[in-house]
Image 1 (cartoon, helix red, strand yellow):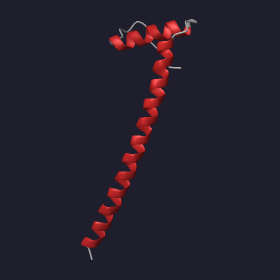
Image 2 (tube, one colour; image 1 turned 90 degrees about the vertical axis):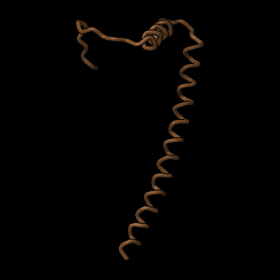
Image 3 (cartoon, one colour; image 1 turned 60 degrees about the horizontal axis):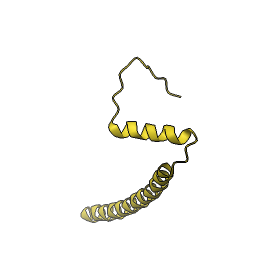
Image 4 (cartoon, helix red, strand yellow; image 1 turned 60 degrees about the vertical axis):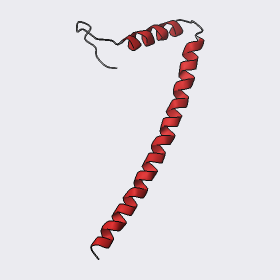
Amino acid sequence: MAQVNFRLPVILSESDIMFRQLQYLCNNGCKCKKYQEFVKAYEEVSQINLTLAEIGIEEDMIDLMYYEMNLGHRFL
């Protein structure tokens, strides 16, 4: 676990404060539908991001293959 010096000032954005308040409410037994919706949406978006990243890597590898083929033809 990270060590924290509580004497140092910490600047929190408004979204950080709201997220911590939401976390507090949900961790204290409050049945929070919004929190569950946020978690579900985050999981869906993370899967979409992963898929897009894999597509991008695949396209980059294809581009690299063509680039290397063109380099080989230049020296023949």
